[in-house]
Amino acid sequence: MIEANLRTSGILLAGVAGGVAAGMFGVGGGIVIIPALVLLCGFDQHRAQGTSLVALVPPSGLLGLWEYSRVGCVSWRVGLVLMPGLFFGAILGGRLAQKLRSRPMRQVFAVLMFSIGVWESFSAWRR
Image (cartoon, rainbow, N blue to C red; front, side):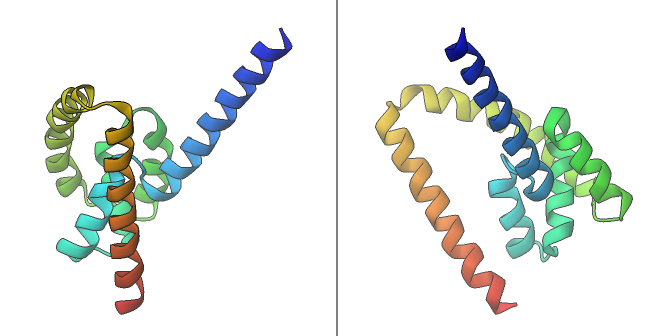
């Protein structure tokens, strides 16, 4: 019983942390979309994050989207154009992920995250 409660509490805390990250940074597709909007489309960081939330609305992004929209940091047109690509890309990505074993999948993710981290770090001080 105690073990089940600890697990449930851990899951809830993970959900809260994920929600905070989604609201603050537009996590998920935002790991790819936000750098692309900033570095390739010339959006400022806040507009890129707010715009990514248009495509990542249910459920974690809804309140973050509301806050970014409230202060005018959302490009609705770009967000709506991103949405179908994310929808079909998620299906394709899920299928591709099923073909990879756990360790190579983790390695690919680590390389992606490291590369984006380096890219964001250098570009944050360059502009």
